[in-house]
Length: 112
Image 1 (cartoon, rainbow, N blue to C red):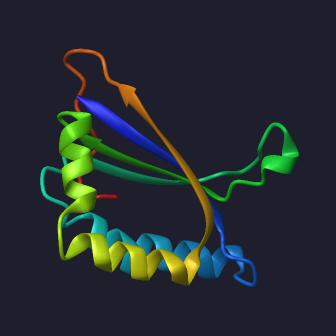
Image 2: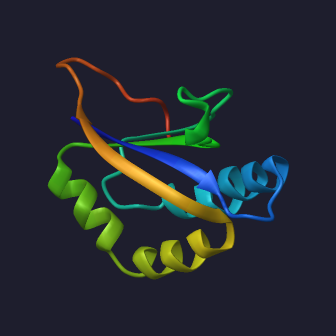
């Protein structure tokens, strides 16, 4: 199993409260529909080192393989929905993939 980890910075002009409301509301609703999604978590960043990084959130999605993740994020209509929605609240994002150890269970999609 793999985890896609995304560091996210809010769009200029949004408060942290506005960013989190949109990210964990409308955006999370789209992400929960991705085919093959095994787990989902949204976390607030309290402090960055170095401080200049200024990330606001950490998003994590779990899939069986990187190829499954790539297919999910490319699948229509979700791809178009995500592109349109990201423009509303994301200023910058960087992602990487992490391989999970055998036996790992991702967090429940419904509780994220």
